[in-house]
Length: 137
Image (cartoon, rainbow, N blue to C red):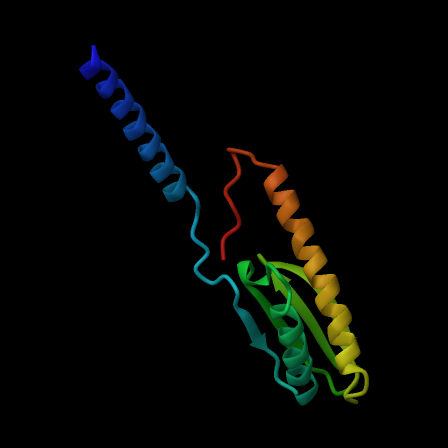
């Protein structure tokens, strides 16, 4: 009787351990989590990136997300900057060549981009469809 009870309990523990291992294996590992990629080319773009990245990394859960900051410079209109997460633009702005207010704009951009990333993650977690593949890098 005691041997049967031990056998049943060990079978339960083994199946629970296998299920936990399968759950960990089923979760995709984010290899690039926490990366803030700099794709800027001008002085204003680099300054925006420096302030934005510092503010982004100060956020509590920012190490979970990989984002990229892109720039398209124009002598006529200034630099168009945008922040991407999971191939989606979460923030976009046009900065003039003057470096005034870059720090304040970076602070606002970090707040807006972080909120938009959180909204995307909530939407991703709430809408799971077997027919659709997850977004790729």
